[in-house]
Length: 241
Ligand code: G3P
Ligand code: CA
Image 1: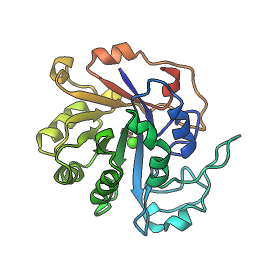
Image 2: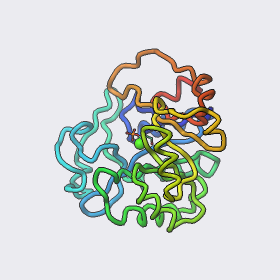
Image 3: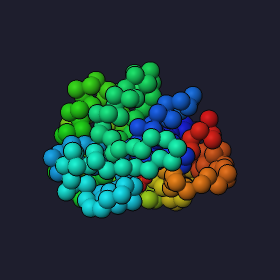
């Protein structure tokens, strides 16, 4: 089972922050880091899960209504650690790029199924190519149309189609979105393992997020592997590696 840091180490540190990614870089044997991108009003790519800033900062409103300068004034609580800011994708890449060149993978989830940020695909593919990181990147989205556009822009890149049920991932893949991996919710494995044998199945686990306290419960990864899951996106990868 390959283990990924989901939004960085997001159980003990605030999700999708430089702090959460720094902690992920300390984990030996980690397959990769997953994060989410949104677009600001002035078209900067920022790393943030929600379309709004309400849950993770002191402010309210849609990311797309803030300029980058305005977003950078917001604070993300981090307890004893320095207060964090919403990072730009460039800041995160600066932090993790050398680890990527040593083999760490990066799953960039385009958060464009709720609000379809026009041109986001071109922007992210251009940036990853400009940095020469295309072999280390896997793009994913719940939007099959968005992935289709990524595939047009990069015929060889790795693409994972997101959905809750693995059967729906497979259905969207068959529809020609250009994906070559399935990214279902871990409780959405509704097909027999034989049907999944030829696929990379990267499952995401919702789990607990900072500042909720860790529960101490551990998943049976071997059981998940027997169901056909090859990779797991975990909020607390540090507990498994
Ligand atoms: O990419 C897998 C997973 O991150 C999708 O769900 O809501 O955590 O972005 P979410
Ligand atoms: Ca995600």
